[in-house]
Length: 574
Ligand SMILES: Cc1ncc(Cc2csc(CCOP(=O)(O)OP(=O)(O)O)c2C)c(N)n1
Ligand SMILES: [Mg+2]
Image (cartoon, rainbow, N blue to C red; front, side, top):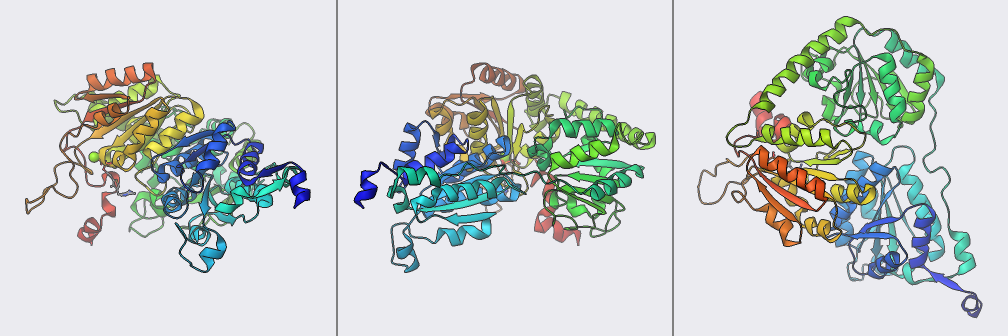
């Protein structure tokens, strides 16, 4: 109307940017195309950091990792339909990992989609996203963009964090809105992740259980790392003297060489503990569902003797697998803070039989590992290569370590100690391949810190094209491809002999040349000395680097640590 034209106006493009900026969000991970290209150009011109990827899954993974690192929702923008679908894997994985991210996709107009009239990239994206994420919203009027972004932020970070989908039909971007109306429509979200204070009786129940324990154990999950309650957690562990086990992305919450770290005696402590306190750790497949041999039970489905305390922000997590004697519902910072309050200077000494037995097994296992690591076989294997990475991370504790693969994952998790919180980013709850380059770009772009990505050669292949993205933004990322010529190993055989075996790759592939193709540094490392030299140079130069580490192709095992999940393996067991 003339009245609107008379007053100054803004539009949907600018309202999205203003809403993100108002909520201290300054970075967007995206892949341009209809209908978001102009939006991304305007966002970049407006001072937002816009990082364009070569595949939307990796833009989405970057948004998820940014969420885990910062506690603010990472933002991923995609085009409609196929671009949206490519982003969904990252959105679903973020939701499974409880990482806060918002996937914002352009979409076709509702009237065309709802009549299925065959629009360009037509898809009912909102309906498809809903089952795969924590919350999903659509905005049809530019005046509602403020509410849409606010709801998406609050849904992503409040309670148990997760992935949120926000659907923006193309024409919303171009809608004009009177400036004064627009200003009033924006929301700066107040307290998006409110503290959830645990009930005093829940605290007391947990303390009583710990007081009576002869063999207590604390398990730190990635939820404990995400909580950014590092000092509270460290204080509770050191005041009680209770041994602890960090799950992979909780490594570094306390330094992995901490005297109370029990990772080197993992199987012993899980089977023998009598009271186990889970902190932001779910009793899922990664902890054998709290049942069976892992927990000292006779048969595979049996429950162990453990009594569980479970600190989780979700009130419905307890009893998901086995009974939880002391559910402690709340945010981890508040829960651990209240526990620290309740125990004062501590709970009394942990029985020496327990800590002594753990120390004995730790020493034995660490000595065995040191001997293995000291070997320098003629053909570099996972151990001799990862011994170099171990020393490199020890010398650069603030570096981010991205890790995926099977053997490349399992061996790195046990050999490479972490010393700082939230520095290890890996395949998480799903065990998904392909997170590597997206996670690496996010860590480098959001923190400016050096990133070392230890990649199985198969795992690297899922996101390898993003080396161009890494070079384009000149990010301090050093990729170490553990090249053993295949998935799990390179020695598989095709009995017919008429083609490579299904898990094999081109022998001694030159992944390093992929990095050189885009102006980065490519190196082949045939032995630990060459690997060490290349890693040192990459960290000194902070240049995008890919080290093609040639690994003994017979060194791995099928599926690494989870061989038993293969159906054939399970069949043999019956
Ligand atoms: C999206 C997706 N597709 C397939 C798979 C299944 C898988 C698990 S681990 C892995 C790669 C193992 O080979 P890699 O060379 O990376 O490591 P290494 O053992 O050191 O040789 C695959 C394909 C998963 N988890 N996710
Ligand atoms: Mg491999």
